[in-house]
Image 1: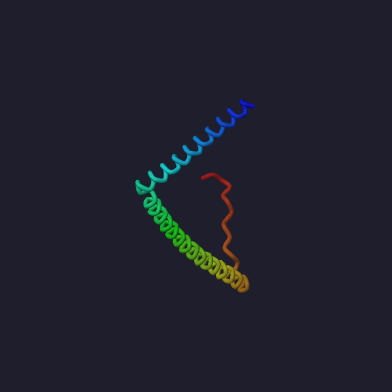
Image 2: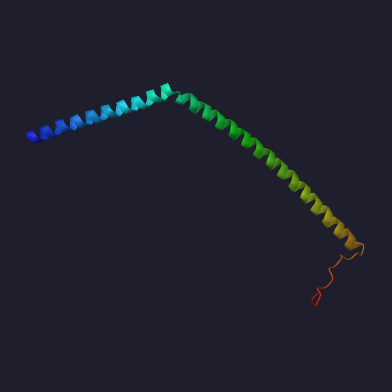
Length: 106
Protein backbone atom coordinates (compact mmCIF):
# COMPACT_ATOMS: atom_id res chain seq x y z
CA UNK A 1 0.00 0.00 0.00
CA UNK A 2 2.89 2.42 -0.19
CA UNK A 3 1.80 3.35 -3.75
CA UNK A 4 -1.62 4.36 -2.49
CA UNK A 5 -0.11 6.58 0.18
CA UNK A 6 2.14 8.25 -2.40
CA UNK A 7 -0.84 8.75 -4.73
CA UNK A 8 -2.93 10.24 -1.94
CA UNK A 9 -0.08 12.56 -0.96
CA UNK A 10 0.42 13.66 -4.59
CA UNK A 11 -3.32 14.23 -5.05
CA UNK A 12 -3.54 16.19 -1.80
CA UNK A 13 -0.55 18.29 -2.79
CA UNK A 14 -2.03 18.99 -6.25
CA UNK A 15 -5.41 19.99 -4.83
CA UNK A 16 -3.75 22.23 -2.26
CA UNK A 17 -1.59 23.96 -4.86
CA UNK A 18 -4.41 24.37 -7.39
CA UNK A 19 -6.86 25.53 -4.74
CA UNK A 20 -4.38 27.98 -3.30
CA UNK A 21 -3.41 29.16 -6.78
CA UNK A 22 -7.06 29.65 -7.73
CA UNK A 23 -7.65 31.63 -4.56
CA UNK A 24 -4.59 33.77 -5.24
CA UNK A 25 -5.71 34.43 -8.83
CA UNK A 26 -9.24 35.33 -7.70
CA UNK A 27 -7.89 37.67 -5.03
CA UNK A 28 -5.49 39.23 -7.54
CA UNK A 29 -8.25 39.87 -10.07
CA UNK A 30 -10.45 41.43 -7.39
CA UNK A 31 -7.68 43.68 -6.09
CA UNK A 32 -6.65 44.70 -9.60
CA UNK A 33 -10.23 45.70 -10.43
CA UNK A 34 -10.65 47.41 -7.08
CA UNK A 35 -7.54 49.56 -7.45
CA UNK A 36 -8.04 50.30 -11.14
CA UNK A 37 -11.46 51.85 -10.50
CA UNK A 38 -13.40 49.25 -12.46
CA UNK A 39 -16.38 49.17 -10.05
CA UNK A 40 -16.89 52.92 -10.49
CA UNK A 41 -16.66 52.55 -14.26
CA UNK A 42 -19.12 49.67 -14.17
CA UNK A 43 -21.52 51.75 -12.08
CA UNK A 44 -21.22 54.63 -14.55
CA UNK A 45 -21.85 52.22 -17.41
CA UNK A 46 -24.89 50.72 -15.68
CA UNK A 47 -26.25 54.19 -14.89
CA UNK A 48 -25.74 55.29 -18.49
CA UNK A 49 -27.45 52.18 -19.83
CA UNK A 50 -30.36 52.60 -17.40
CA UNK A 51 -30.79 56.22 -18.50
CA UNK A 52 -30.66 55.21 -22.18
CA UNK A 53 -33.18 52.43 -21.54
CA UNK A 54 -35.54 54.90 -19.84
CA UNK A 55 -35.20 57.31 -22.78
CA UNK A 56 -36.00 54.53 -25.27
CA UNK A 57 -39.00 53.38 -23.21
CA UNK A 58 -40.36 56.94 -23.11
CA UNK A 59 -39.84 57.30 -26.87
CA UNK A 60 -41.60 53.97 -27.46
CA UNK A 61 -44.55 55.13 -25.33
CA UNK A 62 -44.81 58.36 -27.34
CA UNK A 63 -44.68 56.41 -30.62
CA UNK A 64 -47.39 54.02 -29.47
CA UNK A 65 -49.59 56.93 -28.39
CA UNK A 66 -49.09 58.67 -31.73
CA UNK A 67 -49.82 55.48 -33.68
CA UNK A 68 -53.01 54.90 -31.69
CA UNK A 69 -54.14 58.46 -32.47
CA UNK A 70 -53.36 57.99 -36.17
CA UNK A 71 -55.29 54.71 -36.25
CA UNK A 72 -58.24 56.47 -34.61
CA UNK A 73 -58.15 59.26 -37.20
CA UNK A 74 -57.86 56.79 -40.09
CA UNK A 75 -60.81 54.78 -38.79
CA UNK A 76 -62.83 58.00 -38.49
CA UNK A 77 -62.09 59.00 -42.08
CA UNK A 78 -62.96 55.52 -43.35
CA UNK A 79 -66.26 55.62 -41.46
CA UNK A 80 -67.09 59.06 -42.86
CA UNK A 81 -66.21 57.96 -46.42
CA UNK A 82 -68.43 54.90 -46.06
CA UNK A 83 -71.30 56.99 -44.70
CA UNK A 84 -70.94 59.48 -47.57
CA UNK A 85 -70.95 56.66 -50.13
CA UNK A 86 -74.03 55.04 -48.60
CA UNK A 87 -75.84 58.41 -48.49
CA UNK A 88 -74.92 59.08 -52.13
CA UNK A 89 -76.26 55.66 -53.16
CA UNK A 90 -79.52 56.40 -51.30
CA UNK A 91 -79.85 59.60 -53.29
CA UNK A 92 -79.32 57.71 -56.56
CA UNK A 93 -75.81 58.94 -57.29
CA UNK A 94 -73.63 56.30 -58.95
CA UNK A 95 -69.96 56.24 -58.19
CA UNK A 96 -67.70 57.42 -60.96
CA UNK A 97 -66.42 54.46 -62.91
CA UNK A 98 -63.13 54.40 -64.66
CA UNK A 99 -63.33 54.50 -68.44
CA UNK A 100 -62.54 51.22 -70.21
CA UNK A 101 -58.95 50.47 -71.07
CA UNK A 102 -57.90 51.53 -74.58
CA UNK A 103 -57.73 48.72 -77.09
CA UNK A 104 -55.21 50.38 -79.41
CA UNK A 105 -51.66 51.43 -78.74
CA UNK A 106 -50.68 55.08 -78.20
